[in-house]
Length: 444
Ligand code: PMP
Image (cartoon, rainbow, N blue to C red; front, top):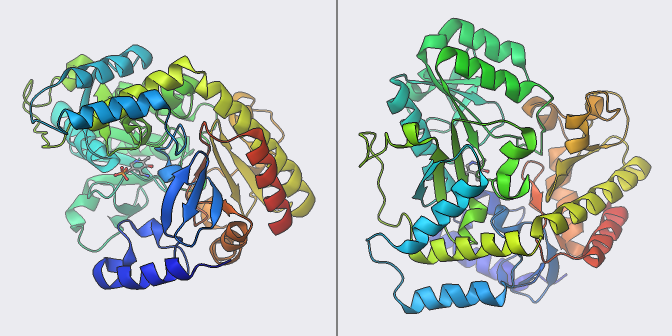
């Protein structure tokens, strides 16, 4: 496979962009494929190589790379009217109405410009609303590049996970293992009156894919209620992708107090959002006094792209198609893994999937998906990763240095490491899935 142009571009990029990229995950070993354009479910790189794409922008690309005509027309029309004004517009009200109509826990929305901004504002809002400072997060969870959550360690000892984050932040952030009810119960026993919020992804989407075990979210819901803390679901990745228009919270049957959204709701443009009950949301400026602001927030082009994308998804049964494809892909992968790599695990749900290069528990084969969650006796559930440590135990080097590249050689572009989820888009077809399964068969 010729990657000369990508290599040359990477050389140039290294002189003017730290690490050659604008977000670290893109710097795949030894250098990334520079993408020239997208086409439906495919992307074409600078050397003309064509790939079936499962990066999907790391989640935002729901409809594929060739947007439906009506979405393009709406975006173009907004652009020709001027990209932004710094004044309210009807389209931001419409997108907020769409979200509140479909997600029962969300009565009001504040739009921002990234997932990071959304979680940063959600944490500030929770602290301002409760008058408390401590936040409980999950080990292996990811909430963007923000100080309060770039914290590692455990409930006994936490520290910044990046230089530049003051140790004082670690004093107010308590990481606990995902799916460990005892750990979070103990934390509330010790610090219950100081905890502003538990912040968690509904499923860990940045650590392979780790599904919640039955009862875990219910425990978080009960503990937060009991102690006057807020439950924040970070649905930046899962929002309007898992669980369809109701988001992952509808799939799991949990109503959080606050939700963060981003990725899909911007239709491929930069966006973030915080949503929740009116009573809490009205603490934000200018309704309340918890400061939050942004020049680009509610950007008309983004709002238009997001609204038209979600309307299209709702009207064209996109989520059904995505779940069917996901099922086809995961069950095919389960068979291949059983046959060729029984030490590995297939995880995922709806349009998310990942093959994890390890298996915790007895050597059985199965997809760790909704099935396991809904049936505690599911024979697979013993084999599913349950927390960050299980995925950290995977053969990550083999994933990044061998597997990823050989899949790319086969014309399948995955996310470049063991930890990032892969995503289907509405443009993928059953034939793409068959072709992808053949590639897995060849490479595994
Ligand atoms: N939260 C979650 C769950 C995410 O997956 C991400 C990004 N992958 C973020 C927050 C940060 O979002 P952004 O990259 O848009 O700042």
